[in-house]
Length: 404
Image 1 (cartoon, rainbow, N blue to C red):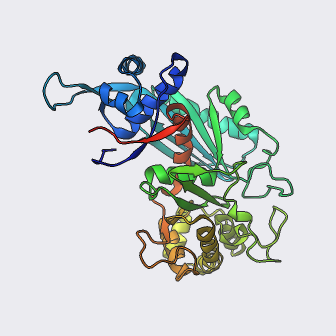
Image 2 (spheres, helix red, strand yellow):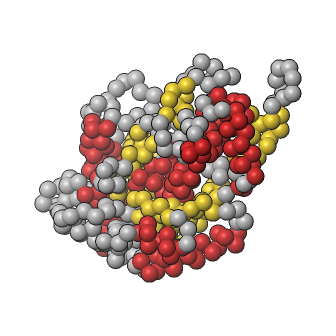
Image 3 (tube, rainbow, N blue to C red):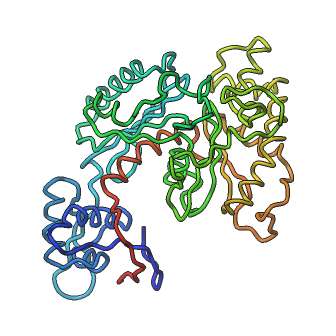
C-alpha cells in the first residue's frame, strides 16, 4: 500500500525490550506486508523500534526467508538504502471450508495471494471423515508446495454451542456438538488449526480479495448451506462474545411458519437459503442440484427458481434494513454458493428496500451489492486466519504520520 503525503495510518508499535522480540517480529512483518518494500530506517520510524533492533529482526527474517531484498531505493545523496519486502514463497497457509455437501480448499502465500483453489463434493461430514478429507488435502498441498505451512484455517457453518437451539439439520455438520474442533483438527493434522464460522470467514475473504477490499465497515450475507451474516468493523471481523454474531439464519421472519431444525418456526433460513432452494427443486423432481446446475436453471428461467427468488427477496429486504438500522454499515454484500447471475437478480428483485438509516440520497456505495469472490470467499477467509495469527501483532496501536 502506497503512502499518501499527509495521511494518517494506524500502525502497531514495537516494544524495545528483548522480552518482546516475538511481538516485534510480527510488527515488522505486518508493516512490510501492508506497506510494500521498505528500508530499515523507514521500518524503524514506522514501528518506533531502534535501528539496531530493526537491523537484527530484518536480518533474522531474511535468514528465515520470510523477508527478501528487493534492491536499493534510488533517492537523494549517499548510499541508497536496501529495500525489503515479504517473500511470497517464504511460507503459506491453507484454508478449508467444510459445508454440508462439499469442501473447498485454498492456499495463500505469505503475501496473501491465492496459489490454488479447489472444490470437491463430500457426502459424509462426521468428525472422522472430515479429518480424513482434510488430511488428504493437506498431503496434496504439501506435495504441490515446498514452502513451510504456517497453519490451517477451517470454517464450518454455525451457530456454535447454543443452548436451546438444536443446531442440527441439513445446514449444519452432524456429530460436531460438544467437540473442540480446533483441538481435534490440530492434533489430527499435526499443524495449528484455527476454526471460524463460515459467514465470518466469508466477510474476511471479501474484505481481503473482493468487493470489501477498500470498505472498512460492511455486512456480508453469506449463502452457504444455511444463511449467515459476517460483519467487518474498522477493517476487522466482528465475532461477538462467543463467535456467533450475525446468526440471521435463525431470526424468525414468518411467525408460525415452516418448522426449522433449530426448534423454531419461520426462520429466515427456511426461506432464503440455498438449502431452501434445493428443497423446492427436490419437491419438483430436481434432485442433487449443484452450483453449475443452478446457473443452468437460472439461464432457462425455471419457474421453481423464479418462485424462490421472489420469496427470498421478500424476506431478505426487511432483514437488510434491520442490519442497516442496527449496524449502520457502508454497504451489505451478498455472496457465497450461488451463481453471480442469481445473486444479481435477487438484488434486483428486492427493488426499493425498506427505509432505514441507510436511506440517504448521497451514498458512495449502493445499499446492497454482490460479492466478487464467489464460491471461494469463505475458504479464502479461512486461509487468511492463520496468516493473521502469525504475522499480525495484537498489542497496542497508535496513529502515526509516516515519513516520506
